[in-house]
Image (cartoon, rainbow, N blue to C red; front, side, top):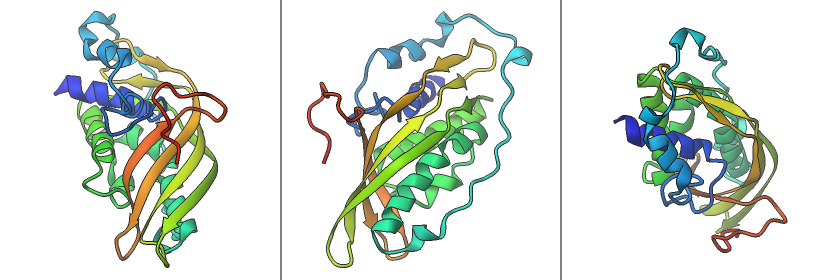
Length: 213
């Protein structure tokens, strides 16, 4: 149980490094890669005294913005923004309820993030820092009013520390900047994310091909 979780988490962190999100994890949730293997073998890491690990952050539960229930582009953009801005809380607390109401249960990447956060918490692990800043968002919908659409967000995630196992050396994660692309659908009451992918920062070429819509 530990392996998939740790792999997922890194990927989740990768929500940062991602690219073709349905693959395995956001960066590598956007394609399996070296990071995945590096975290798959925690036995290779030095041990650590749990008492010397950075303390678990005590973040307040983010409040849902009113826009989440608006059947328009602003509501769709608010939904993705909320998911990103509540990520550090979810990964530090293990409380997945902040995401559950805004993701489709068939969104494989989303479900991986939820499972990851829960297992991380069960293992006594947590994320320190790693907050997202959403710089801008845009929406393209289909239908009138739109029933489905795509939201693109430009973001920066601050550097963080992932304590996936308190008895092992923590993982240092660098700051990440990029673009996340989410497909969304209106369920009659609110927008739900049905898939997510991460593209490279603007101006950078992607080796994975054109994932930007």
